[in-house]
Length: 344
Picture 1 (cartoon, rainbow, N blue to C red):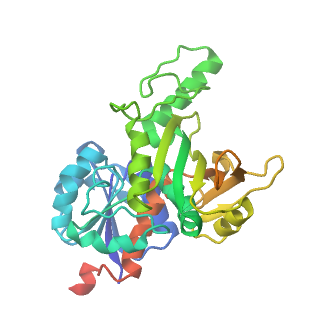
Picture 2: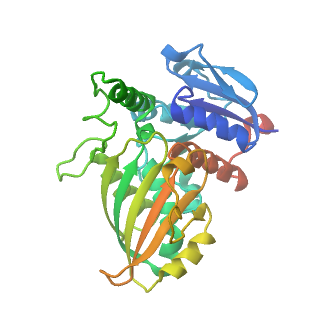
Picture 3: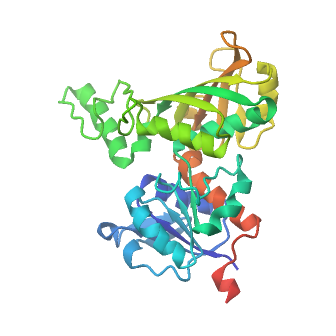
């Protein structure tokens, strides 16, 4: 007997990806319910070979639901996740609403699976930011081997991180360039087509953006609070797939060859690192894939015990939907959740 799973935000990019991955990975479900806001009620979405009719999140009864995969935005999660959790349904939230709450575990299963034991305090588990998820998958095995002191990250983030409207804007602006139409910037602060924008999320008082701060705070929470992290987050004209240039300073000696061997054996990592034309992975190639790809592994001679990496992953999958479902799988594998229908 399987579980009853609800997808909140089922009509969005990540919600649709969650439905696909649930089906792909044969997660043990008896029932899947697609939920969204009132304006999306009655729309249809697919789950494997089945077609689901979207229902209203605000009127759904969660008392018989085991897991809610929440991908409806931070304000919606702030309002509804505690109410859903109080009905005995475990919420796995994809927004930033609960990531920094001390009573809510922030989980990447390959990185800190043991932290999931604390989920019962609020019955909510947080999914990290898309750029952080792939980063810590690559960093964790290296940290275990040589202890990371400092990280400098530059992200090259695809427009899908901004949702469907952001993807539509890149498409429409690209078309406008070729047909000489006026270019409108509505979602982004500047033109994104054939351009890069060093600005994601709102600016903070110290000059960093909220997106950059998320990488810092989440890496510390999941990996090690003693690690120093600095980040520059950049939006690039790519539809799917985040890339990161990562400079790492270690406490102990580690060579590029050692790092390569460690990462080849690490869960969730796939090393593609040849010193030749095309001997690396780009976001185009990672779209639709589950792995975190690591290339351009090399030593940094400007610091003691330094390495450089190039890290690429599908932000809609490992950065969001896949990680959430892996958290659900971890709950099941550890026996931390029981199907309500089975208990009845």
